[in-house]
Length: 173
Image 1 (spheres, rainbow, N blue to C red):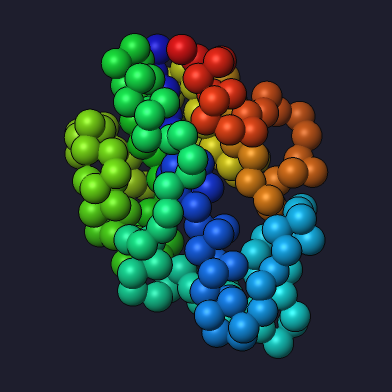
Image 2: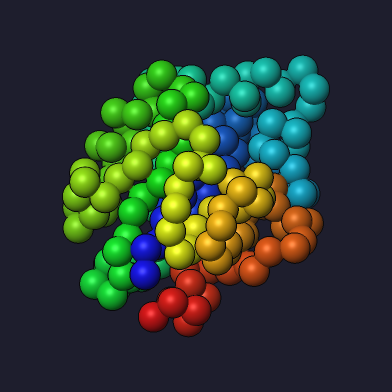
């Protein structure tokens, strides 16, 4: 099977990075439960939203992301069993292309550059399975779509869902 796996909020914890940077700047720790159903920038006071939206434009933002728990181990096993590609929308933010590639080199060296698709829109992907946190990417995919749970999508329905990498392993290994 050909399997496409998104990066942000599936392998890399971008949401958590937004909350950490917000805490560093304003000294306020946001309760993750209060963020459910919202983008990180929607979870802060209106006067701080533009600053939070700007995080992804900062040098180092994508390079310094933490791993989503269990992603390395399960991806290594999936890569042995399936044709696995990382498919990440990396063209929107100028620094993200190199930073995402460097991050993958560090944390997923078993996924070589030939198995990385750093793109714009994902509707061009043709394969068997797409794991993504964004429903708009899954809507246009012709194969099996798995929505990976992130705070912003907890209220999204209509897709097969995985809440963790253990659930991905149960479904695909």
